[in-house]
Image 1 (cartoon, rainbow, N blue to C red):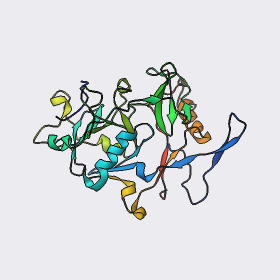
Image 2 (cartoon, rainbow, N blue to C red):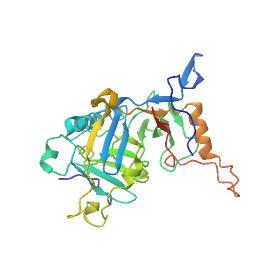
Image 3 (tube, rainbow, N blue to C red):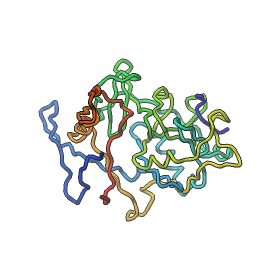
Image 4 (tube, helix red, strand yellow):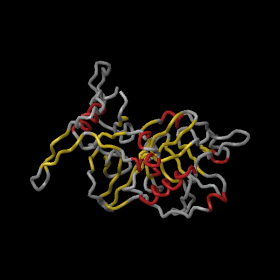
Amino acid sequence: MTKFFRLGAALGIAMLTGLASPSQMVAQEDGAVEVLPEWRPVLPENLLLIETEHGTITIELNPDFAPGHVERIRKLAFGGIMNGNRFYRVIDGFVAQGGFQDETAILDWPNLTHENDRPYSSGRFTPLGNKDLFAPEVGHIAGFPVGRSELVGREWLLHCPGAMAMARDTDPNSGSTEFYIVLDAQRYLDRNLTIFGRVIDGMEHVQALQRGSRDIENGVIQPPAEGDEIISFRIAADMPEETRPKWEVMVTGSKAFEEFKRSKRVRSEEFFFLKPPEVLDICSFSAPVRRVGEN
């Protein structure tokens, strides 16, 4: 059966021009000095492009947190397997779900073991800098918003807007081919479903998708209406190199990222006659990205 979880001012930093990106010198515990770049490229094997009639939705996949799910998405993208399917369940302010609706086609893909969280890693974790309502600690790893708990020794990706995850039934290990993109923060779902990517461009196209009614078949769009078509679903690495889009993400932990966060946290503009508290919501902003070769 079709699966879904049953719960009811740019920074003005110039584009690359062939010169090295600005960098930051970071002292390590052993006294060594590491040069931390301000931008990192998105690898083509981790760049998913979903073409819709509204435009292209660009997603960075995260094999470090969810290797099995990313591998499944790569296989679904290869050879146009996902092309022609639809975003068939879209609930305003909740999620946009797409993938196979043909139950026979779904049966061809074994269920995946969930990858909802992982042990504390050696990845560079950059704390947000203030408390969070849902996790003992939140911050970023490689541009992705992350929650952590020292008590249980685990870390996990967050259901912030643009997060891409695998839908499932009540069995935690029942995800296979049907994915969803979060339209508005759904933090109560953290650690209950596997997030494997995030939208880095084209979120406006996700928001433009045709809606269903949550009160009718849990948001599945009803005939004769049809959800928006997935015209193409492909990984950049499968495209000819000269046609691949190239994207970069600001390095979380860099000086540029700290300055970006400060611009969101400290509101000192004349407009604010009452100064807002210097607090950030982890889901209220995204790590900046830029497309290489465009102004």
